[in-house]
Image (cartoon, rainbow over all chains, first blue to last red; front, top):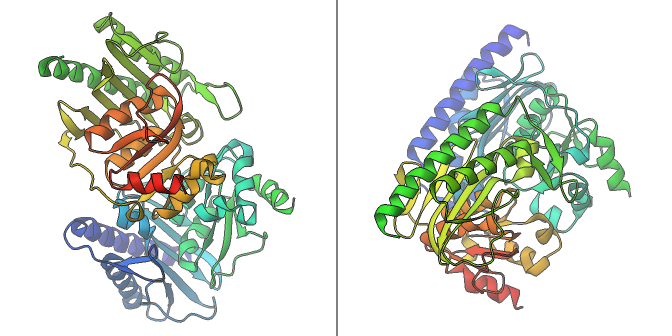
Length: 259
Length: 259
């Protein structure tokens, strides 16, 4: 893809997200339906489904040959990262969405032959859209976003998954205690935003492809490291424990894990 | 105090907070000095001191006979809750303030003979001021704030202190896992806001008087329960483990603690 095409797709993607978020905020207090999926805290709402349906529809209409990975079943069965692959998470942080009507994100990621192209994390209620990619740089709404400082682990806060932190799975508690302190926000997208904006030195959690796809593109554009917990490259088509952190904190985290 | 006097004090307190927050936001990126107190994560900045000095000064000028409890040493040595006692926390969530420049609060609480009078929790960066008291009700900025639903523990998210959650001190982990999920925000004031706005079903942490004074007034005005971890009334002049929760969740939390 050349820069002109990337910029054209970027204009489209931002328009879709704006429309989806505006629609969601308008109807948030009038028709809200919640269903349980695998357990009492695995929830889905009419907004997850409607938003995903809308975003997938826009992609299909504009780019009928592209493949789509998405959470609620409107996408494709994608087996390889060959060609152009979109990742759509209509509502990231569904528990926050249901319980708080706040602190959740819409996310889109676009890859070509496995390479980062464009990522979007929209904090729906504050309307803060973090967007960009390797060709167009990093932006927060209308402004170019400065890259985060390359801080060591002890200098920053660390976002964690609650149960992994509580039970010290994969040394997550040890890692968090070696930082300035643990934070639990309940949205992978907003945790990625915090690290990319330089407000946290890292984040660790078990994540599905749609939870991580946009964040990985933006974090790598910001000069951060995004790997599995073992330091390997992500497999974008499966769930895995994901670590996003500054380059300087990465070896410190790995040393704690091996201790 | 009669309603007229409470309303006059309310006008003053809001004006002081607006001025202090505006000043802080204006100088946030120009002169920021951090010092360490008891350990590497116990921090104080020039803004904590300047803001406390300003707020304490306003109280002294307007109400020279009142007593003041505050974090950074500009207040009085207060031995009893007799008479009018102010509590000032210039920056609640200092670690967030230093590391994120976000998600921190200014708080003021006013008691008379130990009774709740007026409370203020200002999220400085979003400019959301939760304010009120038993005589004037609950407000978020210009709007009357509806009271939170009386939800059971399993229906809502629960804010926790990181180390208490990680080590299950006082059964905090068990309590959080019986809720919809744990959250760690790093600011007692913002955690109180979440519970009062109905976004969390509770919050538990070890808190100093200035951390809890405003939140207690607002939470009780909102019909929530605020007690020690043992279910006893707070001693407003000492540090203690504080539990704020819906009335319906309170016996559920107590049952878990006694298990």
